[in-house]
Length: 350
Image 1 (cartoon, helix red, strand yellow):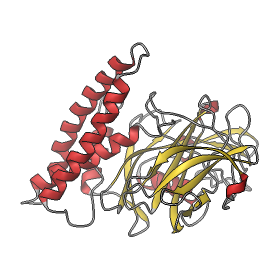
Image 2 (tube, one colour):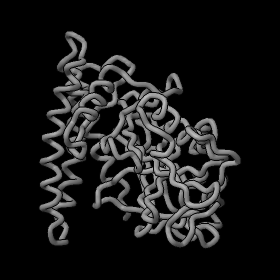
Image 3 (tube, rainbow, N blue to C red):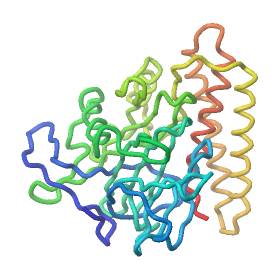
């Protein structure tokens, strides 16, 4: 399957469609996240996993930097096609194609995002297509070195998220699927990234259904990388209750992905927060210098809205903090949501 020139994806068809919960056969992955207008977008076609030889490379550009800096995701021109590769920052000859990810990027057609875990062993890849509002998502796990492959199998993540939302969130398959023709369906499952826990044990996403009229706000869930399953906690259930009972589901939410491992000492948490705040400040400073009219003002308003939502989100998070850990939990929350905020400005195309 390849992306068509109008920005949509070719979609596989189900062999059989039950009345309530259809599972399209070989359903094409497609996800998304509403991303800041300041972010960069891209488009493409599907690829099979392989490693490129340096001799085939024509041009390359860094699209995404991993949190720890051990690899980048570059778009490299191979055989007249721009393809996404995970490239070692220590040795550019060490690279591997990210299988089944978008290539032939086009900023007018698709918003493409990558979100690597802090331990750099997982990558969440999401797509949001302009054409028909089609979405896409894939969760990758490292195989070895810079070689990643879809967790379990291609499209498992999309199918599993959809099934969990239907079983636990009151959704129906028709909230996520649009029928374009006989046995041809588009994916409209939106899975917005809200952050990794600092120990890489949990991925926090917000689920929305494009065709669900009674709920515009997200349904929050974790993917637990230790148990390899989806879950909710009392903290997430609290947020889901807030969303369900809110008059304005369009309000900004700032959540934190709860870690599984014990928190580091307070000094380490302070140092991590300071480093992340400095990085975010540098991003703001760079964006504020833009000459494009109105962008700086919009960014200031966006920053104030985020700070307000962050402070409100901290109060909710700390209500679930174990006794004696409130200050460390506060520092951990501020650092983790700042890291997620930095991801809002990725990718940065240079």
